[in-house]
Image 1 (cartoon, helix red, strand yellow):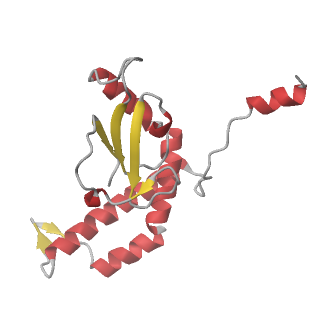
Image 2 (tube, rainbow, N blue to C red; image 1 turned 90 degrees about the vertical axis):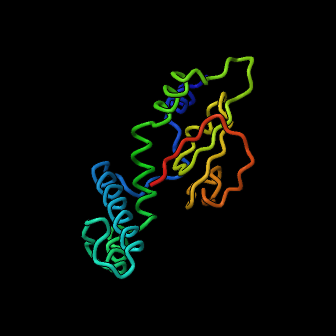
Length: 167
């Protein structure tokens, strides 16, 4: 085998989607800000014309919050930030540990565990041979992730576990 071929094998595979966001610090700020704005938008929508909900003052009107959301790049920036953070901190390891602690990890002779992953940002769980995963996201960024709203799913499938990465 040639030396050049050996060098090629040592290269890490490139992800299918390159994140536009490179800074982990910026990614964390973006996700935190996105969640804050979403919480405030939910409160503003629920309160209607009232100034407070459960003694919680609402910071601004819905259009102001929508503007703040557009300033940080909206859901697209949130998705890119999530790709970066989950790429650096593999949440699937945490999922594996919980499944194992609960005694749900199937033996080699057993069929794969049926899992519904809600809010899937990456395909880490899809590549696990002992899991049969249906990965969904409202704004899927990968062809293996089904674009659908969790609340539109008609009950009917049996799942052994549900992983929710929703806001």
